[in-house]
Amino acid sequence: MLVVTVFTLSGFGDITDYRVPLFSVTLLCYCVIVFVNVTVIMTIVFNRIFHVPMYIFLCNLCVNGLFGTAGFYPKFLMDLLSRLQVISYAACLFQVFVIYSSLCTDSCLLAVMAYDRFVAICRPLQYHSVMTKQRVAQLVSFSWIAPFGLIAGSIIFTSQLRLCGSHIQKLYCANWLVAKLSCDATSWRAALYIPLQIAKQNRGLRLDVME
Image (cartoon, rainbow, N blue to C red; front, side, top):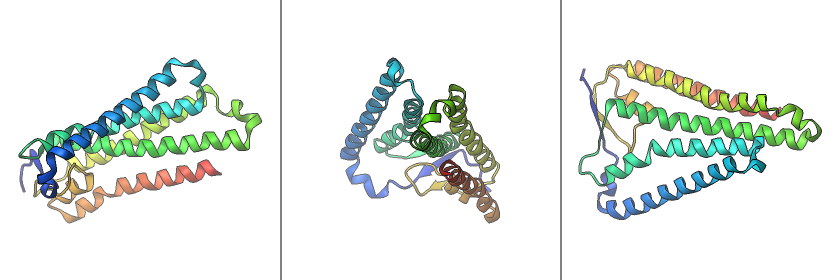
């Protein structure tokens, strides 16, 4: 068993000859993502005409987009300019938390937006009585709190594993790859249980929305 404090990201082998152009393209994409999301957020926040459920959900989706991309792009850009691609144990788990929770929050928000459109189209006369401020606040809170709690539980479980390796075959940290470095094969399979339950919950949420 090793005392792992740093992980090596070994997924950069095939792109070493294209680091500079890839860095330029990636930086441009990240700047566009930030600009578009910030523009949408500011437009919705400062225009009262957009203070309706659909645009509130859209605003949260853009905030989550900024949150998720911040967990990947800055580190990826730094690694493109570095000779050695490493990440600390704590930073790796934090990156896993940001990326995974962002993806799950995206799914929840999209399901909530689908529910909002379902009510608006199929029950237009009852829309305002169904989509009240309290209901909107509850849906938004659930979309953030539930994924954060579930992913945090998965990360805590992974952090308890005893690791026998430090090489991650990817450009970024992934929970199942960290868990796969466990000395016990049963433990890393168990670490996948929570993400699978999250996927099932998101699927169930979409089905409930459509009923």
